[in-house]
Image (cartoon, rainbow, N blue to C red; front, top):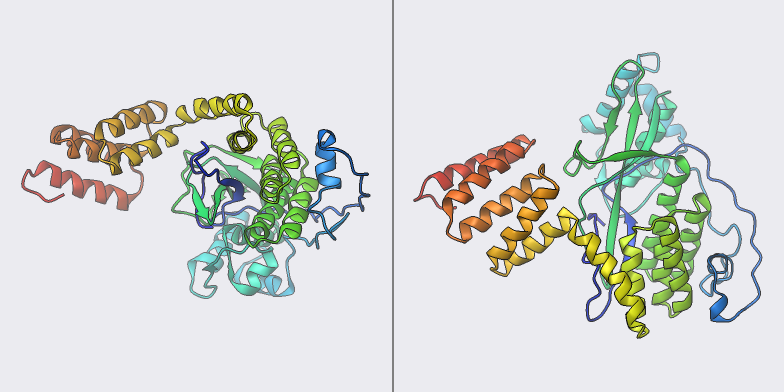
Length: 404
């Protein structure tokens, strides 16, 4: 899962499940031990009309042999003896905070001694250190655990990044970005993000609790099991996610997806509605609920949620960008230009909007406009390589005989 984002939220002819998945290329960490859970008794069977959120969690037909405290819990930020020894060798524990942070980052990222490798698995801090593998959730877990062991104050952050959908089989995945924020006493706070190509200081971010970070972790594990068709294990981890934070709407959405896929629409509906109770603007919950109502022939209910999804999506500059990209690929450059101008009105600091607008004008035969917008893309870009790229393309546009 190296993607982050949602695909189209509107149902297609064959509706796809949409799963909220913490971006594997990004990570966050938390330090508190995992909260233990008391065993839960099964509720008596009841008719579909009595399916409540409590029943979904306590008496799901997908629970199988997993009841009560069913997930093998571990401290996702536990520092192993090997990790502690590594820190003793490479970081001066008596140094000031700035120096300790610099030494830690250099020891993990700045040299060839550590050699981290990306894969799609979500791991604890110690598991990541031992294997040198994982996704960015795994890497950030490891970083936060090590930083806290050094006495640094570190928190998880959720980061609002542009939607970017991926697809596995018949499941469309949305990954939510999380990184680490180091609070330095004598300096500005520092963000540590293992997905440096995606990170943008302009993106809004908020510190989250360790409990919510654990909710992300178990939700991620649940999606991995769901994609492997291991429904009982997936449900157990989604439920553990909600034990960490009962209002964690992505887990409610995924519980709904799981039940809908396994043929329990009443449970799915309840889970989607519960997600909306905690996040009234959760477009993924709305979209999945609309798809469910379409399947059930409940046209009026489906249209109500579809209209809400469409209204919010059309105000989203990144959705407009996706529409423009589709129009461009289909040769409808006028439609691409229209959507890109709307996207720029809503967010004027995305160089890719200007870049695609320049290409759209170029393909429409308006070279002067293409040159104007390529220059703007160069001005907006903050990355030196992108600036070079745009500058090179701008030079080509200024040369009528240049090949683009």
